[in-house]
Image (cartoon, rainbow, N blue to C red; front, side):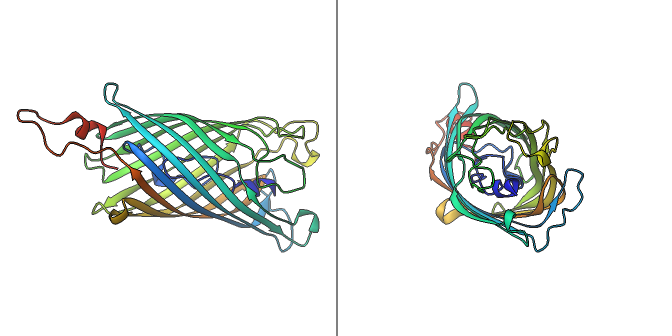
Length: 318
């Protein structure tokens, strides 16, 4: 139940604002944005009526309903170093989440509202050429409260370190057809106030799609998560000892460019096809991303110059 609640605690996904929430990266995974200041708001809904044990068998809980609604607000600054052809980014995001679990068993029924873990990414490094984007970064999830077993805290109650590497490959120089992938490794510290440490996990998110008329982006998306280390600690419940959760999800995404406000709105849906030691459900997200500021490229080339470096390299199309 706690794992399902934490699905709402991740921040917004635009500009790669965190990868811990399965199914929220999609076509944006691995892409490098142009220089500027971006504001992103994402609403994420998770719903499930099935819980799986460590072997993937359904746990017989009558009238089980799990719902989590999270809204994350994020700010990203991207700076371009033309002498190194490198992008440097920094991001901060804060999520607010509501989680509820109801069933015929009162001991697993909860209703909580509060802040999720704050997402801080002090550094992300990116490179961009005609057919390829590559990004890599480190991020930290900061807990907003102590974790109490059985209390159903919205925050994860622990510091989480995230290392990520992403690639976006484009079939043509106009970047109309593409495939993206982002891999991330999550290392969890001990939960605050209790001797429980979640086992490390690996995630891969991404998709394949096309850009139509320069206004609409559409494609198929997927996600996978594997826990690669056992949960541990003297206060870990016996039922969770040796259980490693995993899940796979598939879905679709559509994004529309809003030229009038220099922004983009995206809708994404994913359905979990297999789960172990966790809930099995579906994820629906809506995301609005705005370019609050971008550097102005030179309007014309100087006579005799083939191109203006800042226009060609420092301010590529978003």
